[in-house]
Length: 171
Image (cartoon, rainbow, N blue to C red; front, top):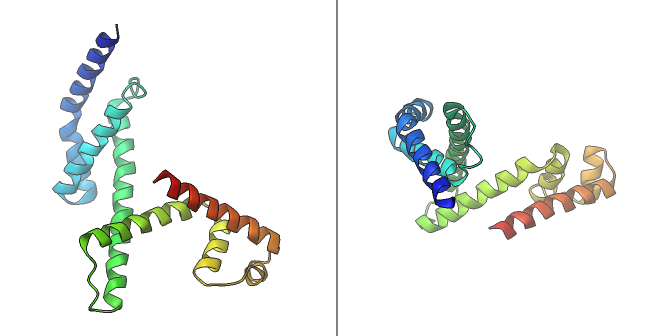
């Protein structure tokens, strides 16, 4: 019974791929503006479907593929923006410093994780965290600036730090 289900899923996925891959590839090429990244994201889209195909059995194929591909392409654009900001920051600093490809990848991955953490925070938590960590303001200064209590600042910092720790533990 289990091999029949597996065989049916395999046939269903093969049909989905053969009927929709070219369409998705062209759709992504228009969205991203280049064929290489479109090919990569099309493949990644089908990998995501393959990993959860039981969950996706009853979805309209193009709607499903479009939704997954949009999410992947949004992440791709965010990564490109982070990479560009990273390279711009490198140019503004010591011109003798040349990070290795591994160091660049680690820095960009770290920045992406930080962006994900910041995006997961409530707006006030994000403000409090940035004022503390980037601006270096004390809790009392943050409380005064945002017109909130010091206890609220502490609570927001705690939430932000917990999210940072949880993200680090997941990696």
